Image 1: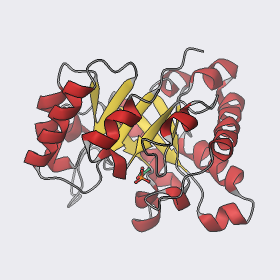
Image 2: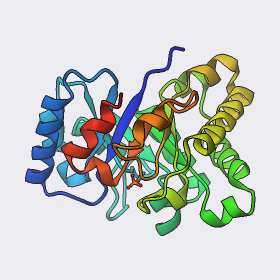
Image 3: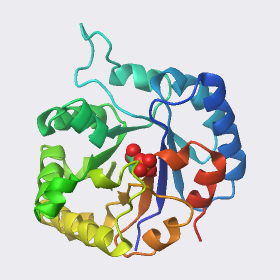
Length: 250
Ligand code: PEP
């Protein structure tokens, strides 16, 4: 298997620049012997500060969103060019909070995916069903549709710069984790969808992270599953003492 474990921390709307720098410094020193791929995604205001700390380390700098347009009259938005200007390498798109709280639809997310890839950023595309959808037996179909839509118009070459994060909405920030078996089943299904769209090699190589209440005490069981290639971590990424054990799961 050529896939590498990829552990990412989404700091959401937390931390001043000083707090963010402190956490980034702790991660740089404690993860320097880490064997996997790592990313932190601070708020826009802390990107430059954290970028200076993680520069030259094994931790990538990510943003939590990007505008769908390159530039122009878009009050409050941050462009892909501005993200690149402060050293961002990866952007998280389609997070459930963007989809559900801020009503981003698949067409908008797809526009952002293509724009980010066009400008050389890597993408973590989040997909996942709500509790209502899961209870109605629609988890697979929702993830399939969000994957297909999100990747519409993305070439096979560009797909190599895309990671999918399966994040069941009911498991985000709730303390409820999908069982490793349930998560693996959806990951396998998403991998099958990628195979149908891009072929077997792409399906084998694509990294699919799990997100939703990943903690130090459940990370290893999740990562042991064949189709789970890493984690997108929210709450537990806000402290080195909880993120490092996840990042170094044994
Ligand atoms: C997330 O927001 O991407 C997430 C998975 O959050 P948490 O780990 O807090 O559930």
